[in-house]
Image (tube, rainbow over all chains, first blue to last red; front, side, top):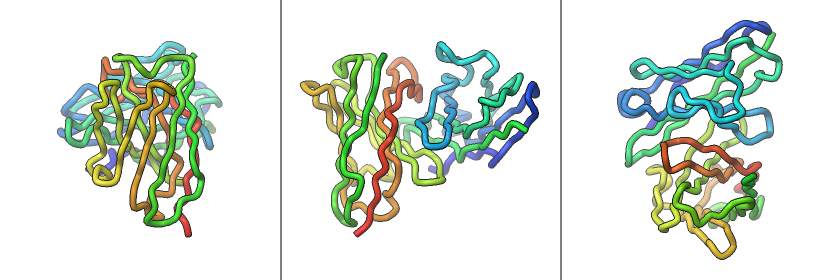
Length: 111
Length: 121
């Protein structure tokens, strides 16, 4: 099972919006509404930001939103802030044989 | 507040078995609401799901690692463990333990800080 495809990097100025794509197949992203997103700072553990495509855990700012269309999921960060500069990984359930596939990761830079 | 903490040797020789333990505090591991998972990340690379265990003892493993992986639960110590056999340099990574909600798939809501394991002679 190949990793989900994410852009290597995206950038934006404070206050702007950025969107990170996560492209898979009908066997993972397109087949299930179980896409999650994780934020990771250098040397730190990942933090859950979005689950079930578009749900936010308690404590995650509503600037973070998730969506899905076909085989591609997206994470949008609105009102970009300096603290949002980090790596972001998507994850998708891929059935009861493979179970989970992570994305290749995207570095978000705040200009 | 649930906390997870990985522990184990930071250096393992090639062909040997990597053994790590995850100690859970602030909550019981003996719950039917969560899976207990292992995830790894080679330096500068992405995340890879290794496998998970449920309170019943039922396990699920990444097919690419299945032949070498064993995950066990020790409810008396509120711990779960990972064993990865026949390691090579490709198994060098930061290993994380994480909690996953049963109610949905892929909701890893609590993570340990991670522990670096290097495979080298």
